[in-house]
Length: 419
Ligand code: HEM
Image (cartoon, rainbow, N blue to C red; front, side, top):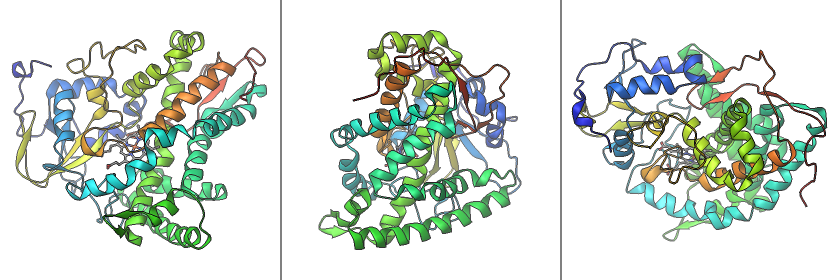
């Protein structure tokens, strides 16, 4: 890959001017790529402290360094912040915050539920749902992509998969916003408080939901989890709750974020949009390329289990790392012509779904939803734009827009509904 030897790599001290907190700035959320470029130029580095009590974080941004960190789960542990507030959880989320060797047994149990063959069976239902949602606004000539589509689509698919009632969606979305974004509180104490409250609610909700699903034998992934065995043993109730806690975050936010990113890009890049309309066979490659370019999940957290180094930067035991997968995905030293969007890219070795043992469990489901959406939407609504003068409000890290107004010609599409 890159000739990294030529660059200064040893940065025992913090690099002034860079802080994890900068990454929550609106400009970063809208387009993090210029920041990624600057970060990569400096190599792995400690950030500048912005809050007195916060420990410095090592920022990892180059393709090779990100790959090395994700692949070494023994030294770069995922057991960060678990139990001590973090995302409001009392115990580590399973399997995200579980290290090897324990992690393997959970993936062995969970992988079959979301493997490609199982997920492919959902395609008809996803096609129907996408078309039903488009039916609601197609004749209006406008929509808010977020409220009218990007939130209800993945959430409905997910609740049905789990066996949870659709009426609970608003409550679950409120819990998810509290856990992930601390209800949007800027003040760190207030955000932690919001997370703790949302976390408590989440445990209460799943406590009651699991009882009902068990008593009424409601079909779905949660019942399957209650019936499942690892080496002859059932999962404990706490273990199932800790899986549910992660599912709420992973299942209810990331596809919404991806749709926000994709549609903002496609509305602003008519040549790429037309390519999808004219040649739908390009859609699977377009999904991969937009995931790479947009990297809706900007980065993931790790903590060092021993003194080590990454990309020449010494890392001490117990230090936190933030692994910027978005920066790696746009690193020209890791990916050819990384600075542009190319649907004809022959291979796409991106980290949008992470890498190593924690690679996304829901990637096949996410890809299905994104693929079906691009196909059905562009068949029915080939032309659309963000109304001129619209200011989009981006949220950072898990990159989404709060609202995405789109306008499009009425009746100019192929209005054939799915069978
Ligand atoms: C486009 C949408 C998605 C993106 C971009 C995405 C991204 C990611 C990333 C980057 C990781 C790695 C985290 C780490 O290494 O710390 C991850 C893990 C995970 N994702 Fe996704 N995800 C998506 C959709 C989903 C969906 C729909 C589900 C649930 C059905 C899901 C479930 C999970 C789980 C359970 C893990 C933890 C895996 C482990 O620790 O072994 N994800 N995801």
